[in-house]
Image 1: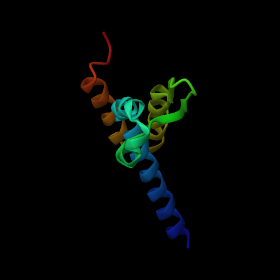
Image 2: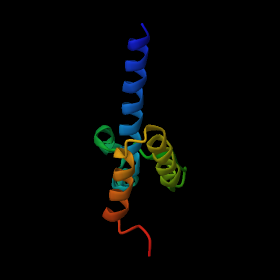
Image 3: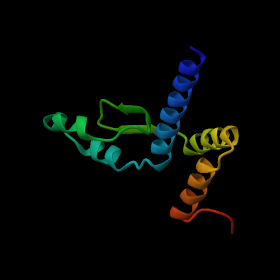
Image 4: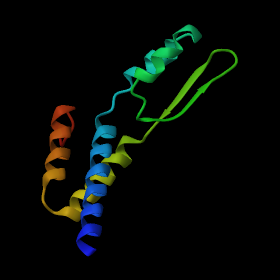
Length: 106
């Protein structure tokens, strides 16, 4: 019974880590596409990646507003998970993410 609980916790941690990684790499391109879609294009919405969107609003005058997930908080969560695991895999991911985006120390 204890082994099953531990396995479920490990699976949940892997799923959380995978989702946080996805959010950390998420790009807002599809939100721009969504803002340009008209009512006749509603069928295209299901194909858009809106994982990093926290809130969307479209005003009566057509104004479009989007609020996004805070990537710094996502990275902080990933760092916390990496510190808990101590195996370095998430730390390497975060270090690699900084190199990919041109981040890092100057």
